[in-house]
Length: 199
Image 1 (cartoon, rainbow, N blue to C red):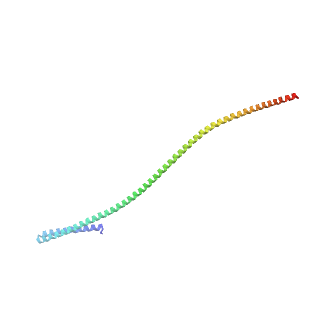
Image 2 (cartoon, one colour; image 1 turned 90 degrees about the horizontal axis):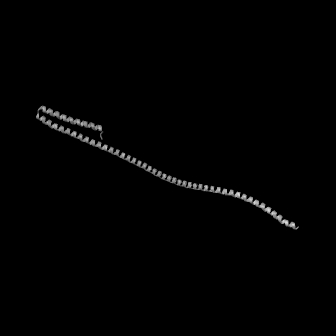
Image 3 (spheres, rainbow, N blue to C red; image 1 turned 180 degrees about the vertical axis):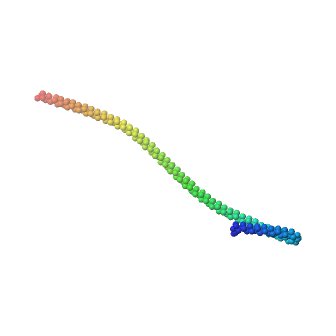
């Protein structure tokens, strides 16, 4: 296929040839009219018609060629635009697929994070429940400790009282033994007196 510059030169040549034919016809007719010969005017008229027809034919073929070239250029541009559009559509699909993948990964990450948050909240709630139970047990142990401390104080008080009472009882027991020994001595003496009196 010829290049655009070659086609422009051919078009210019064709139009120059057509213009030359019209000028030639005009010169011939003008020469015939100036000669005042009817035969020459008639031949010039026929020649002018033939040269005009040839010029019209050359111009028409140039116009048809120009239209064909323009149509070919438009078809070529349309193909180029179609290729560009297909490439852009392909790039758009790739972009959409990439974005869909990223969105899918982001949604999956969000779901995993939500699950982790829910699990963490569950563990935190369980820890709080255990902490509360331990706090209740500690309160119970503290109140039990306080009760036992009071009971221990009471027990220590009673033990002290018991020790004092035991000491008192031992003193009384000692006094009673002493009295008992004294009474035995008196009894022994008293029982030994009649025997001495009878002797």
